[in-house]
Length: 509
Ligand code: FAD
Ligand code: DLZ
Ligand code: SF4
Image 1 (cartoon, protein in one colour):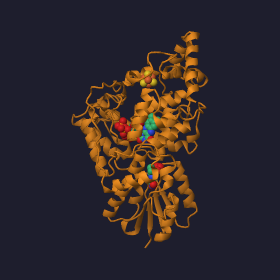
Image 2 (image 1 turned 90 degrees about the vertical axis):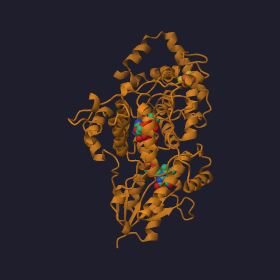
Image 3 (image 1 turned 45 degrees about the vertical axis):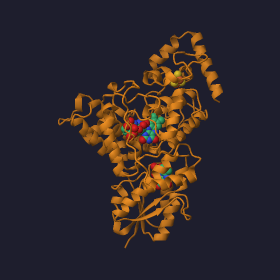
Image 4 (image 1 turned 120 degrees about the vertical axis):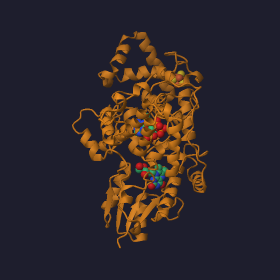
């Protein structure tokens, strides 16, 4: 009998995974390995490691119940080599394996390592495409080839047609429009009733993992407890159902809003489950579509949610694989400032950043506008090295895997790919933050003051960014009015912005 080894990674926890479909439980061994290389290549948030290990252990149990033979290497196993390649080699020898079938990993780093390992092997190694996405690599390339610009909106429409989500019987977008984003920009009101994501009490497996993480990763960023994430597909499904009932109806209206102390607002907190493989993205979208068709949620909420999944999520993945392993080194704006330490400590007088960092430390979560328009905006305005920004985002969020995190950080948030992903840099002064949040009310800085002592740092940094990057950005049609405003400003005003920003950046260093 030919014995097949199926290594399953921490973000491949899906019963219908390509490599599991390609193997037979009667003649296969499924390998899971908790390894220091994966847990430490960036200093992952403690909750992220606990989520990964506990979900892996639970998924391994599910496979055992389904009749699979599982080789599970625990982190503290004395024979653990600490790398995935090392554990695959060890399992081959121990179990006398004849062939390997693996689903491609979600990172160039691991993909290259596995390809090198495969080349050096004497047994056949088959690396299968990960088909848990709507667009395959070939689909994305077919769409992208020959286009001058890759824009989400065009790609998204194709995904709507392909999936049939929110389409009418005669092939038109539901409600006569593809995109209801313009309806989704309401600032939040702190008096709104805020739902909470469904929380789960850790079982024995999770408790054991929490103790392990405390023992080995106690110095990593983030609070380990209270730990309340779901760690099984069944829990992820329940958590998502709870979101559809309690938060989705207002998801659209308040998608961009931020309130101090309210980490989750009306967001799904589904990305960690979807990215680990515990929740199927298309099932989630169908559930949202059903809620719309039964009249439980408005169209702007359902469309807004579905666009994030079949639009943005698929789009950034396409860009990640298309751009290759060099994408991570892009730095079009030549930013070199080290990441300020308050990204780790939260020790800053800027109330908006403090709130987002503190919530990130507590929950390993921030919603999109916090990531884009608070921490991302600040890093871009201050000229922080995009690779350092990328490594921070990859470490601190429970949903962060490079295929999705890198294009969002380096491309969308830091404009380091020169506009491949975003048509203009996502930068703003304090005014936008004040409009979309209540952060400024509790801040030592005055958002209304443009420059000088006590002025909101975002104000001067914004114009400093616009000024110093005029050579690269002035010709961008989406920034025409911004440069017209800068050009119209009095020289003394421009000087005041420049010196305020320079003084702030100096004390940052
Ligand atoms: P919701 O607001 O409820 O959105 C629903 C779902 O849509 C999410 O669960 C997610 O699967 C998907 N989604 C929404 N926006 C995006 C997007 N821009 N790209 C891909 N999927 C999206 N998302 C990650 O999954 N992992 C990351 O590491 C990650 N890093 C980011 C870094 C930066 C700088 C920025 C600006 C965004 C990043 N995002 C990342 C996208 C987005 O912020 C998160 O998907 C979202 O905040 C997750 O919270 P949620 O599940 O409550 O999302
Ligand atoms: C995130 C993570 C962590 C913390 N640990 C492991 C691990 O020990 N073993 C494993 O197989 N996967 C882990 N993961 C998920 C991987 O980092 C993920 O599979 C790659 O980043 C590819 O996306
Ligand atoms: Fe942030 Fe400026 Fe508002 Fe303070 S005043 S919270 S720094 S935007």
